[in-house]
Image (cartoon, rainbow, N blue to C red):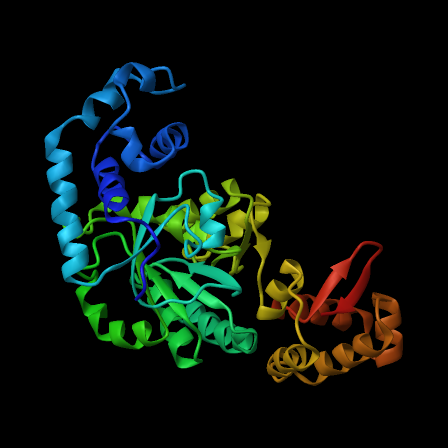
Length: 372
């Protein structure tokens, strides 16, 4: 894997910054902007650095500690020895969406065959305790979205993460696992059997060093990368509280679109998604077509028809009749649909609700309905 055009001295300086406890990504970028480069920071006089807004002595003191320089040299040797890929936040190969996030990592380590340029990217997250409903949705969603060839980002964890990434591999989509530890290990270990398939078309990214294990706090930190890399984040299933809701909140803070798959009221692993929708923190997602429409993706007619055809086979006879009528006639009132399709109004009303849940029709102001 080709690495970014950053000199050895600058890479060592970035690693050194990264290892100082009181310097996070935001502060490091502030220092780099002021000094002109990572290496220049360590040549600047401390009294000049202290004049930077938000930079105090607790930050400056760590800059001159030799242990951080030594640690950076050891990590650099690991990177070289193991041919680890990396992207510096100011370089062209750094993920475009992530670059716009204020707390994006200075350096993103990577391995595999990741190609981001000019690609649509979506993140899919959810509970580790995925239900059969969640599994079925992941499979159908990835199958339906496959003609558009997006990159699928997730966390390679149990449940929704691995389910959606396996489906991406199955349907030939590039998929990226964001890890909460260094690239010299894998968690959970049982997922090691999927590594080779994912790295053939996709791979893994992390901002953690090789000596960092899968500690609990790291999973929450890596969620900003999952949310930041993508144009939109999808939550498939979630309990009332969970890491995927944190990812959704981060995505909202980045002004990214968030989607949530609705479930039955009272289902434990639908509460989180239902609440996101209820609190207007996420769009309701019932199908791939919802995503395509709401993101405004420009899709070739052939691809649109492919998605619609895959969705169409899920409709029963009554639903097909209504869908066909709406496709031909455009926006229509419920009474008009009932009259033209010769279906009782009460049945049309319940059928339209089911069709809305399937993502093939949408309600409009004025009690109108249209086919998607």
